[in-house]
Length: 251
Image: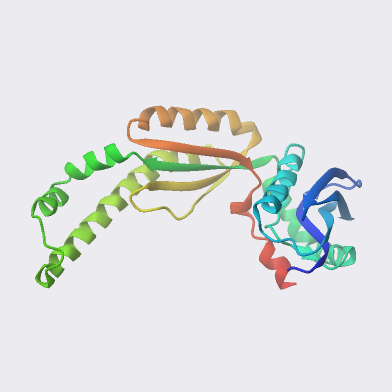
């Protein structure tokens, strides 16, 4: 939902008392960040002038507000760009979704999201391919890809290469993803880049388990560091475990 002028919604928090969270810079204008309440649910908002476009500065400003609030609150994040015409509209949707928000807060209380990407090292990937008998045989056969008669052989190469990559992804899923899932409240696997990113996962972690989870990530990296790189990020709001924006837009 978007409009030229209105009330921008960042997230929902469980809070009965009015709160202010400083200012946010949208469209080169400072806007107060404050709460709109229905019972124990508060929407964190800011008034905006003009359309809030997804440029670098506005995206950064949105994330900066979220990053500050998550230090003190469990929150239900909204995707970038939710703007309503008025505070009354924000209050209406808060009332409409109150029960659902309460259920989500029960699920998200004291939890954070972290992300892990496992990226294959080129040297290890090349070594694994050379150790694969079928891929090595097809590679050494020096198939002429410009020759139409080699079409079937090219299909074979593609199928074996795909199965090779899927095998690596399965190994990483079994040894890394499922090991971390043991310490998480929930996990989600997102799309990977075949032959490069072997795992692109998000985990919902209880703050009480954060230290143990971090240690498990470090231990796994020590086991795999000769083969892959880890890109471990967070803490984030639970974007991968909450689907709120479409519901708001559908209201």
